[in-house]
Image (cartoon, rainbow, N blue to C red):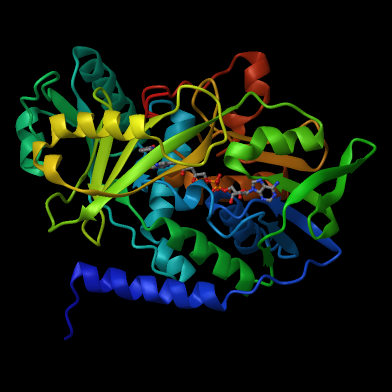
Length: 414
Ligand code: FAD
Ligand code: PYC
């Protein structure tokens, strides 16, 4: 039997992806679709896929102003976990995690899901209390997590300095079934399946207006002409406020840049994902050997999709405290994505004031993990008018004060 190293598998998968994306040609838009989805990121594509697969709705176009997965879906640090506090969040994130488990088989496309385990370090007494509370809530929700002590942290990840100079590691919230997946492959896998079902995934097609008649949607204006539709899904992450404005309503979201960087590749040195939220940095090792590192969000609203020097300094400083062995690593690349933040740090999956228009946004710093579950729920909402997965995440919660507070679980400082 031929044996593959992790590197060989990654290289092969990458070649496969490259071959497929090179062969990709966007079709010409038709004049009319049953459903148009704006945004070919993971959430838009997954919504379209489950509309076709679960509800038989296949006269669908996904319109993308740039390229497939070129937004946050292709820019994130790929952490997948479902250790949230509130029941509606645990339901959608755990649904998502469980769909990720079989996603490669379902899409017939290797998304490289790697359930290697995720730990969120507790470095203050306050965090210990918060994570123990989450572990108890997760037990009631059927999500497998537990609070572990520093000795177990060290055993699971020997390169951590648990005695830390400023904040010793006091324990961690451990989710053994959390992990990572290859971000581009998630977008490409969903896109290929949508295309196989007869849907049109159209790149370089920017939506510039939402056309309405008598309070309901009739179509969109785009850089490639007007296209009609019966229903419209707005799934554009950091650009949600802008596109909602085209449809004539306002959203309670703010857009900010969130940054990440990767190091040069090194030999395998950690086989779990670690988030250190007090000093603020998170790290995992990719199959190619690069250390994948993420930092915080910018402290001011902006649309600058790029990195900045002060973030490298802050993030690397935090991580060197936690993992002293990375101090001499060279950093290879840095980038940013524009994330859409809500006040309660929970997403919006909702009908809108315009009949036929639905919105999926507000995933902020944590929506990669939610792509399959969000697509499943959003498709059900668009097809049938209701989904138990999305009930708690309507726009009306902001008017009625029914927040789904996930500021601790969001994990990333904002
Ligand atoms: P996107 O992937 O951004 O897709 C939206 C698409 O809409 C874009 O391709 C855009 O070009 C398109 N669009 C916008 N306007 C228009 C228009 N007018 N017409 C047509 N198309 C339009 N989440 C996690 O769960 N784990 C992580 O570890 C994690 N790390 C992150 C690290 C960074 C640095 C960043 C930036 C994000 C991270 N996230 C993480 C968050 C996650 O990436 C996002 O929540 C998720 O990818 C959002 O997916 P999406 O499909 O909604 O948006
Ligand atoms: O949601 O787990 C997360 C995450 C990690 C880094 C950015 N977001």
